[in-house]
Length: 241
Length: 170
Image (cartoon, rainbow over all chains, first blue to last red; front, side, top):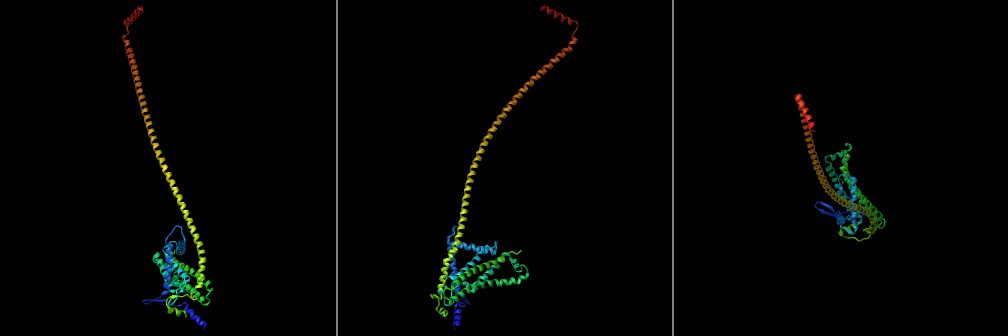
């Protein structure tokens, strides 16, 4: 009996419950939009505050933002290469910051204080729609990067180094967004679920290390997502000789 | 159980300590608040110091360069002054040299003219003496030619008597 009630409660805890918004024939996951907007707004406020009064002497928020900028630039430069990384730095930086702020915002803002009619607020990246959207953007980006930089020669990449690679390379175009989206979604959802279940079983103390671990993996996931996106773009613009 | 409640209640706030996991959340946030600024702050401080150092370095270099430029400008103007001074001096000098050489040339010319004049006069006197000598020689020769015709007995007697007469007078 206990086990049974546990299962139903567990199921009720998170999975499959959404705050649906109906627009035409489309049912949107409202809670994802709400948290996304709030976090994007926070990010925008944070960045506009940090860049409002730029000085030669980097202080406080400006220093932090410049540090982040340096970090993103180094990431983009190492993955994409000196030649075109400048074109893609804004995209990579946006991905990194959005994923990072989503992951951490999901964990560090006490969303559960707010009750919704259905579902609950949390990290936007714990929803597969968000991560698939991001991953498809990455796919579009690397195709665009390859075609705009190399023209039709981009497709040499598919038969490089031998034409035997062709089916695998084509398959990769599908597995890249798939793995990108599912990795991020799985990690963040699993983190939230683990904390949720632990809170349900042992309400105090025990979830704390797991929450810290969650913060750590969230940051790592953001880094992985941005790095892989940059790597795919770099792969597309790379010149084979 | 909770879900059904939530689903029917609509939007609202939930202050249940355990359902919201707020206690663990507070610990996590407090931990981050405690340790993240220290960790990040150290990194950011180091970054800021590096940038300030570079800025100061660049400013120093700018200052040095400005000073060097100033000095070079000053040097340039003094060099220009010197150059114009040298030009004036050399112009003056060249003028004086020209005057002097002109004077010398005039003197030389005068001297040459003088010597030419004296040469001319000596040449003339030489020619006159030559002419004189030739005239004397011709006269002697003429006399010698005519002498044999004019010398005979009577003439000789005349000459001897005349000479004797002369001696007697004396």
